[in-house]
Image (cartoon, rainbow, N blue to C red; front, side, top):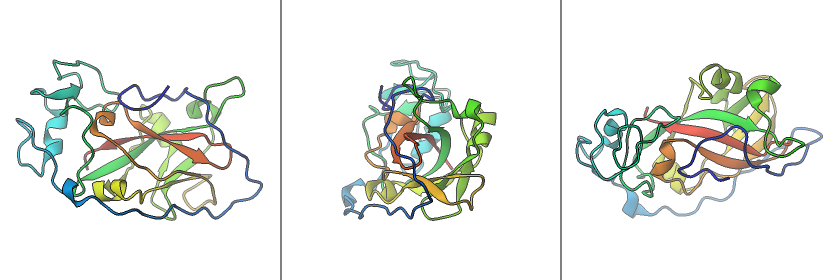
Length: 216
């Protein structure tokens, strides 16, 4: 299964990983150039000012075109993110000048029988942090709040376009050593706002980290 416009899952596809015998220093990939034509967010009917695209996300009305959400007549789908309306086709990338809050959902370990272990049942004290920082979110907090951490990390559309964001996985606290890291976050489109996104990880037997993007 893949994370695109589909459901965000805690039990899902098996992803490879290897156990690190000791914490390692993990490096992000080089940053590519940014497409400046994506500087302005799209405008949709009822969304308010062009720089406030997110205003319609919780609106009880969802004028066409809309991709999904309980208020979207064309695709009345309950979003696990809690959003009501995903305007547009769902294939639009995020504009460079937008800011979103990244909230962790699940740190997924591959299960021996296939699929992935439920981190809310394993009880491991995972922390997911912006790469190289102490700006972190707790897996246990996410488990206590419907698989969505209350704390979030601010990111921008420009950082997504530049592949400048990686997530570190730690255990025991935000200052613990990093033992796994995701690949750089990239190629996100707005349709994923409904049920979330995921990124493969390497190190420590972690296969994938899933997360939501919500308005600040």
